[in-house]
Image (cartoon, rainbow, N blue to C red):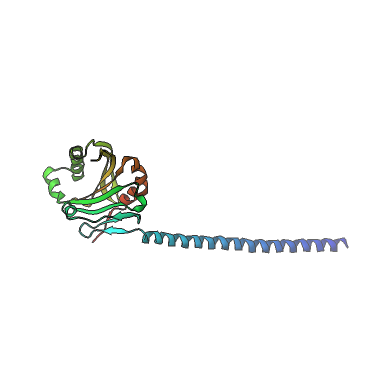
Length: 220
C-alpha cells in the first residue's frame, strides 16, 4: 500500500517537474524571441535614424577640386563672390538664425601648381606651406598669437593645423583653426574655422570639428 502511495507521489513529482520544464522552456523561448525582436526593432529604428540624419546633412561637392564637405543643416552656406573666386575660395559657411548670438565663419580655398614650387626648392611642400604661415600670418593678423600646431592624417591625406588668436578690426579677440590638407603633391586645400574667442570652444565641439573631419576628395 505504501509502495503504491510512494509510486503515485513519485509519478506526481515527475509530472510536476515535467510541467515546470516545459513551462520554463516556453518562457525562455518567449524571452529570447522578445529580446531578438527588440534588437531587430532597435536596429531598424537606428538605421532609419541614421539615414534620416544623413538626409538632413547637406554635402558640398566641388567638381574642379573634387572636394566634398559635409555640414549640419543648422549651418548656412554663403554665396561666393567674384573676389572669392579669384582668391580660389570655393566654400563659405556661417551661422544660421539658431546661432545668431554666436557668429562664426568657415571657408575653404585651394592652391594648385605646388609641385613646381616643391621641385624648385627641393623641400617638402607641406613644410613650405606651414613655414609660410609662420612668416605671413603675424603681418596679416593684428596681435597674432600661435596657440597650437600639429601634423596628422585627415581621411588618408597629409594635413597640418595651426590654431591661433588675433584681434579683429573692431577690437574683438578671435580664435581660428587653420587647416592645410594636401590633396596631392600639386594641390592643397586651406580650411579655416573661426569665431570670437569666448564662443570658439563650444562652436568647435558643435560644428567645426565635424565639418573639418568630413573633408574628403572624391575620385573622378
